[in-house]
Amino acid sequence: MKVTTVFRKWTETSLVLRILAGLVIGAIMGLTVPGWTGIAILGQMFVGALKAIAPVLVAVLVTASIAKAGGGLGARFRLVITEYMVSTFLAAFCAVAFSFMFPVTLQLNDAATDAAPSDLANVFSNLLTNMVSNPVQATSTANSIAILFWAILLGIGLKMKASKQTISVITDLSEVTSLVVKWIIQFAPFGILGLVFSSVSEGGLEVFTSYGRLLLLLVSCMLCSALIINPLIAFLLLRRNPYPLLLTCLRESGLQAFFTRSSAANIPINMALCKKLGVDEDFYSVSIPLGATINMNGAAITINVMTLAVAHTMGVEITFLSSIFLCIIATLAACGTSGVAGGSLLLVPLGCSFFGIGNDIAMQAVAVGFIIGVIQDSVETALNSSGDAFFTATADLYERQSKYQ
Image (cartoon, rainbow, N blue to C red; front, side):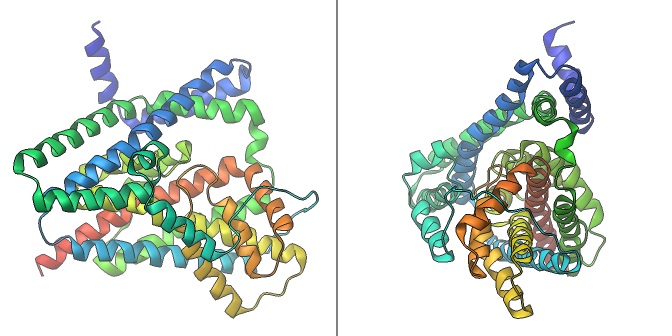
């Protein structure tokens, strides 16, 4: 049988089924042959390839989209940014409510020493500094905010001064980059196999049961955000059942984000999904990477749940007003969360500082977070990344509905 025939049959098989097969095989091999450490390289290569191509994809797609964009995109951008911020705030509030109803305490012993942002001003200072980083360096280090900033400026400049031929070359480059991404995504099942094998072989099935109450609280808040809050926002906008779209985004975006644990690495997957859903490319090529930077429901939940767990452990009294301020802080701080695994945990000390809890105590909670991170960060990334595609599609549908009313 020819190689091309095998590859065609492979690509014609449902990607979800292939990923589930990789998941099961990876877990079984992790339990039965944990010494075969070479298998883990499959996961490292897959995530590494996505992380490597994602910044280039974002740079060329955003530049090309701005350069060739017509009018009428402004309203959609305002709407999707509003969706991102409102959903993140409501997710943070959900975390506070659940933490009061089901309080969790931690065992805080040895002090931790990892560095973390000291205050909200420091977070935004870092954001503004990163935004004007060298564009070449930003692409090589996957600095999403800088990539967006420079790509938008270059796109506007091309739109104003470049010839049609130049814009056509940039467009062709974006299409070629997108094609490379599609090739990489076809090997997702092998990557998932390697990632699951690595987690199970190192920690066994115990990695799914340690710190059960804290993990259950975090996951419950994230499921509430994904299955109740986000579709409610979409329903209020569209006045139609949002769950078919939501389930599609969870299945085709959230499932893969769960295993890659990187919003940045999932950008190409979300763009492919938006194209499949028929969303305007000029719109999603900017809103998706923007969402990977500022749509951080899961991060806001992690910040609040971990902060309040420390506060409950320390016996700190928490008022309703202070809870609201914590939600605002978590919403804004979550926008500064890096799109990589574990990025939200280092902002937990920021929430703790609001209640006067020292960095040495707060960083112990961060250490606990990394212990349960194999599940917490996976669910968080699935929520964040699927929400990027869901709200982008929602804003596009709302704009189309408005035109026909």
